[in-house]
Image (cartoon, rainbow, N blue to C red; front, side):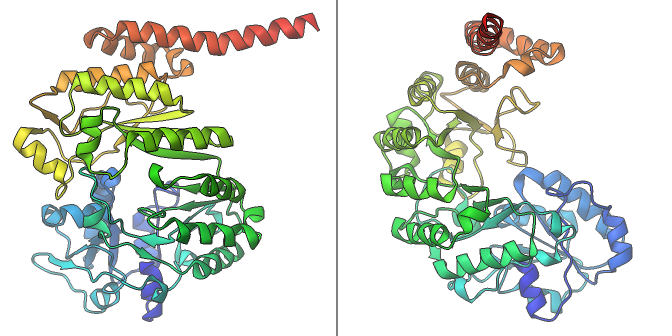
Length: 440
């Protein structure tokens, strides 16, 4: 989007994305070939360390450096020590051209609060043509709206894209996708990246109907939606999502204890989540469930209800996350009064058995939920829902690490049950298949 705004103002942008294409040439090679007048770096919490390394490489070319993005919108002041020249908080489309036009090296960074674009229909389509290696992009991120009016205690969306929900015209969204498939020939996936696409379900349903009717669902293999509220899911929405090509839906359950769940302030009920889970599973779409361990008022006893609920929902996959008390959230304020902030959120929040990290370090603990209890609960949750897969356990080094943690945090019962279930599932299926084949 920023590239599109800069092009419109007469600049020549080049976009490098090392998260999508980690093997493209180094920053130094691009700096020497492209010789930019200004460099901008978008920073996400999960890739902060990598972004800092990129910034350090750019510094030696003595050009103005601008930083922005989700992490900068929350921790702008704390990033002043990076030695950059401009720190932009919020959605930067309406300010980026002026910043670049007047950019210069500075003794201290200029912190700029961006102007919120109210009418998204007035913005140009995203400029992926300026991406290096754009012809190999296979997934297209689409926004049908921005912002979220809800007030979840752990969510930092209000600091990044505001509580004001701003929809885009559905016709423009379809036009953008039609344009994208023409110049990005390898697109196989479309993912709706809205903060909350179903604030007004009729708006999102209208877009889905247009997407299906215009034939795009026949050209695109996979269609996904990053954020879906359970209380907005009904049979009509499920039917439309399935026709659009959705293969899986992840629902933010967050917690299984009524008191902890209500304190989040989502505006949902646990019954809404159970109903949504039933609708998703009955449709044949795979169900994912996201839980958070260590929310305000959480304790080990209450967290056990999350594990019980996870088993009841019987999802196809789970995400067990530690709470990250971002600055500016109500959860942050609660932990500052009732616990300890152990570290800031500058690493990935979502952990599963597919990651090398078996039990990461929590971000916070409280007076009623200690650090060791949080880790023990995380291990139990992962084991009880079989997130440490058997193929990992067959790796002796990985297994020894898991066994060490299993003994240290006293979750041996959960470990044995998980191994037993997975052996029955995988090796039982193999044995059954082998016996059947031999009989034939």
